[in-house]
Image (cartoon, rainbow, N blue to C red):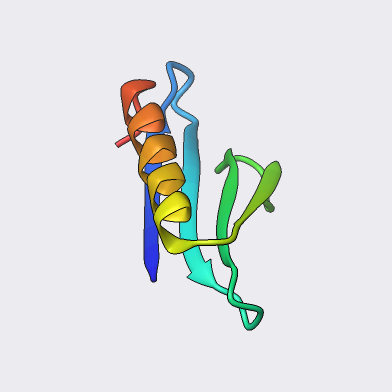
Length: 75
């Protein structure tokens, strides 16, 4: 449904990334999955999954997290 990848270059030239994905499950729920990390590592350093019962709540959470990360310098 919705997917975005944000990134930020740190002073030490490492790139941090933050991906957000909003998707529906087979059980009529909506999931916002957040994966984040640093490009100097082979795999991501963190993952969080939030489950919502309706699309509007999930979309609002997705947009809030996106705005929060952009405010912190991701783009």
